[in-house]
Each structure stands twice: as C-alpha cells, then as structure tokens.
Image (cartoon, rainbow, N blue to C red; front, side, top):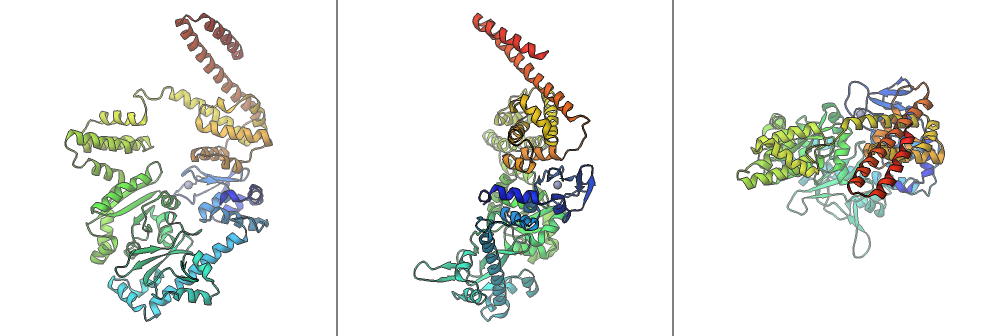
Length: 583
Ligand SMILES: [Zn+2]
C-alpha cells in the first residue's frame, strides 16, 4: 500500500502538519532548549526521554528507541495504517487528496468503513440471536454449562450465528449492506455454483475480535458440537490480519501498560477467564502461534510478556518454539505452566481466581525454561554434545552481552559441562576468534568523531555542503554512520538541505533509523559550526591517510620479503605522496 501513495502527496502532508501540535494533543510536552520533552507514550518511564524536534519535524525516545515523523507517530500511537495516517493528517492540514489515489482515496477509505459497518451490524445480529432468539437457546445453555453468565456474555458481546444460510445476509440487507460488501468483509461466501451468497458463520458461538481502538475487525466462531473446524475465523481482510491481532487487546492495552507486562493465552475462553479472574492484562492469539506482529503490537504497551501453556507435550513444544520470536527483540518473556490437561478457563472454573493467579506467579524466564528442557535427560556424552550444540545455537542469537554470559553460565550449570567449553562452541557459531575484536577503544573514539560530524551536518546543512566536497561515506568506519552519511550526502548534494523525515524513509535498517533520530534531536551548541566541522573533517581525513600509510608499509614489507623490487619502488613513491598529505 505504502508505495502506491505518490511521494509528493506524502511530502505535502508532512510539511503541512506541525508535529509538536499533533503530539501535544496526546502527550504533555514541555519546551527544553530547541526541543520538546515529555513522558514516552510507548514505554513506561518516570523521567522524560521522549523528544520532539520542531526544527526537524520528528520525534525520538532515548528510552525505547521509538521514533519517526508525524505519520509514523499516528501509526504507532493511534494504530492507524499508513494510508489512514496520511489521510488523517491531510484532513488536518486541509490538503485535498485526489480521489483516484489508491489506498488513500475515497474508495480505499470507503471499503474500510463498509467493512467496519458490516462487522458492527453482524456483532449486533449475533448478539440478538444469542440473547433473544429461540434457536439461541442452545448457545445459552452451552455458555451456562461453561460458567459464562449473561452479564459476561454481554460484556464481551458474545453472540450466536444461526444455522440458516442467510440469516445475517437478510439483516445486513435491511441495513443497506449488499451481499458483495458482506463477502468483502468476510461475513458471507459466494456460492461456487449458481448465483448468490450464503452466511460464512452458521451454528457457532461468536466472538467479535476488536482492534486497539475497540472497532470490530473480525470474528472467531466456535462450534458447540463436533463440527470441524472447531474454530473458524474471519478470513484476512484489509482490516483483519491474524498475525497482527490479539483477542481482547482493546480492553487489555491499558492494564498491560500499567502492569508492565502482557499475559498471552491461547483461546478466546481462556482470555475471558483471565479477565474474570482479574488478570485484565491478558490477550489471546487467534489460533496461531505467536508472531513478530503480535510482539510489535504488545511492544507499544510493555516490553515484558508472560506466556501461559498447558504442561502436556504439545504445550511444552509450543513454549520452546515461541522463543524463536523473542530472539533479537527487546521483548522478554516468562513462561507459566498450568497442570497437565488444564487451560486458564478450566483452572479458573475449578480453583477460581486465586488458583489461576497462583499458577501465573510461579512462572520462570523463557530462556531458563528452554535451557532446562533442552538439557533434561542429557546424561551420556553424545547427548550432552547435542544439547550443548542446540543451546549455543540459541545463545548465539541473544544480542545482549550481559544476558548472553548469564545464560552461558546457567547452561553450563544445568548441563554439567565447563563454561569454557560452551564459550568455545559459541564462538565457533559466531564465527569469532577467541582473541576478540581488536582496537575497540580506538574504534569508539573514531565513531564519536564521525557522529559529531553527522550531528553538525544535520543541524547546519551548509556545513554539510562544505564537508561533502572533501569526504565520502567510505571515510566513516562505523557501518551505521556510513549508511547514514551516504544518504545524507546524496540528499545534500541534490537539494542543498537535509529533510530528516525523508532521509528516514531511505534508510533500511532500524538501527540506522534510530541513530539518525538520536542525532537529529541531540542538543549541544557549537560556537562556530563551520570551524568544528572543518576540524572534524580534517581529523577524519587524517585517519584516512594514516590507514593508507599503514596499509602501504605492510605491502612494502611484503614486497621486500618477496624481493619484488619493481613493486617496492612503486609503493615507496606512493608512500611519499601520502606522507605529504599528512603535513
Ligand atoms: Zn519510549
């Protein structure tokens, strides 16, 4: 979708909106120097590290790394899609978006709204059928048997889809919603033979699935008998993506933020049981394994997650598999295991709120859990070798060094092997020599200098114009800074100015974007920016000369050893040329 919106429209919208004004409506901001500062809406903090730059029209949080332009803020904060956010900002700025623009124009928006309207009508219809219809008696009895009171059913807008083939279509028709529109919303299916449509959900208990803003975006239908499948979900639509959606996120989002973590269970009934037990920060996946999309959604509210599994073989396997999604993210996970054969719903029914919350308290770190599971039963030496290989494979993907060394120690203990053996195995997997990376300190000093130069260039583009002439991206030794420098210099050369939001779009890696954002909002005054820049450029160039000289002397030594006098001669001449540049 993103690519379909003409860049000039996005650009006009961006420049027509003041990001400080926009964010101020949602976050309380205070002026601090050239920037505005507030408490980050994307993570829990007590001292403000959320920065908004009016000059650059971007926001950046030093605490959690969230950042971007006005469009990015709306996507993250209000859960808009890209076209929705652009449209909202266009309305604000009084910019007309051509109707033919795909994904943003009236037609795209119209389809969204039609789907939401159809879903809302359907939820009402299913609810009416559950509470008022004669056929709904069956579903009422089922809920009663499962301990769901009328009140709880109404609170979660549970419903019943009747067994006829066109009950919902009839109701939608009366409200002016055509069968084709119901089909697009996933509520009806086109007949494969003959003409017309029929209801997708028949004779099922219905769970409306809402987004963070409480809009019904899809449904889960559960059979009350032995029909297959046991659960039937809405098909994926423009609004409904199973891998990005969690059941009850609409009511759980705020409690998740307050408690600092989310509880993830596997079924609709389980999520409802958790909420009844006072675990209001619980959500359920929609019959899929946990996805990166789920973590992105939850990550807006908290960085911690508690996974709840049944301790049967399938549950243990699922817990192990879920580790995959967390590796390399900043989210951490714990695992709570329920007694074999139990789920939160059955446990709540049998032991009440206390029984359920007690089990959740007895959780352990997901990595500790996996280490324990992988090591268990590894007694013979071949078994230990296999377990060590599996564990180091996992540990190689833990990016935080402190965490990694903690888990190496833990793995060594549990497995009963020396820590050094695991470290050696791990280094092999990382393709790293035991000697480690040389000259780390010199490297850090160089990248500080490079950072300073980019910081200057972003704030004083005229400085960048001057620097471009003498420097190339290759003069930057830090990969992130090199990537930023390449795009920055390109932009400066073409336009003579630095537009940070557009520059962000051109960067591929998240780490590069975060670095650019951090540099763009960084404070600090320069008495004479041009002089500072000249100084930095000179030192960077000196670094380039030093590197070249070192390389040349290495080659000269080699040529001497090989008695290649022609080459030695040539290298010596070049060496003298470079040495002249040094003075
Ligand atoms: Zn933050």
